[in-house]
Amino acid sequence: MTAPNYRDILSATEPFKNLLKRLPTNSGRNNQGRITTRHQGGGNKKFYRMVDFKQNKLNVPAKVETIEYDPYRSAFIALVVYRDGERSYILAHKNMKVGDEIVAAEKAELKEGNRIILKNIPVGYFVYNVELNQGGGGKLARSAGSFAQILAQESGWTNLKLSSGEVRKVKWDNLASIGQVSNTEWNLVNIGKAGRSRGMGIRPTVRGTAMNPCDHPYGGGEGRQPRGTRKPKTAWGKVTGGRKTRNKKKWSNKHIVKRRK
Image (cartoon, rainbow, N blue to C red; front, side, top):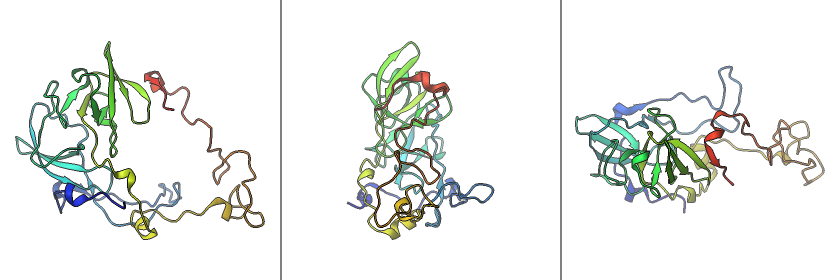
């Protein structure tokens, strides 16, 4: 499989112009022009779709007009028109179709696509685009096929199990959309050829073992040599395998009930 069958899912051929903007491309360079992220550059030109992750227009029903592809994310997006005539892009859920009606409210019908505060969603339901801070917009479970499952509601907090297996507490006054993010087959996509990767803005990656000793810790040797260092390292000698990178004093550690495996 090289791509999901988009023709059966997507309905629009052109995006909604009023919600587009061009983002500058920096090819992995910082404000001094130095490459800080390698293997980026080139690629097809694309417009950024201004997706509304907040969806805080409460108690105003909206109708789905189109399901569209978004070059800046793995999930599909939907163009919705509210009853007052305003249009916006939102994340599409797994079973969303043109003509569906959704609403964001403190209390609403428990159906896919509706956006409700967490304490009014029963245990066991799947949610996506979950807020971490009230009014701050969805931050959790936004990529293709992802979801969080509600495990418990207790004393002002909702326990969510994330796709990674992590269980964390989120304030139950925050908004979340019911369902699972669209394009669940995204992880089965095979890029297939180098040219498609270049079109995505990904430049070639050279193996460390193919380099000289001055360029990489794995470099040098006669023919194919073993790694020669005890632990896997980056080109700059930083340990990459088996070292925890999360700050032990990070403020949000107290909200993690169970770490991912």
